[in-house]
Image: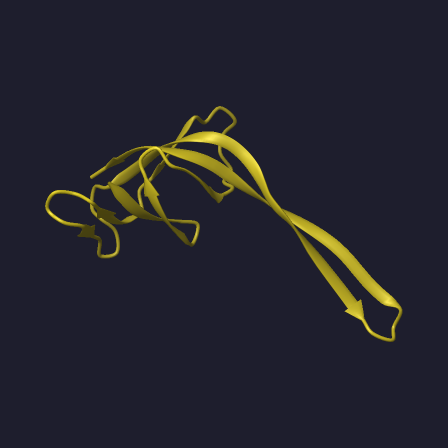
Length: 105
């Protein structure tokens, strides 16, 4: 069974037991699980896929929080020709790594 969820302006196709990264959220320090209630579609079920309008009623995905991770480093280089001016900065996006425990509807 798989589900397509919407979180933080991104859509993710997930399955039970899968680990994936979402945008970092401000959660309390001792949070062990998180629920995603914006389920757009559920597939691989007996009576065919369920597509929401825009979300599937009563569907929810439960996931456990594994921790925060950092993405790849991006280099931003600004160069102004003939001005003897250049700026080099970097950025690493923070993500929240979660593992899908249960898809229910």
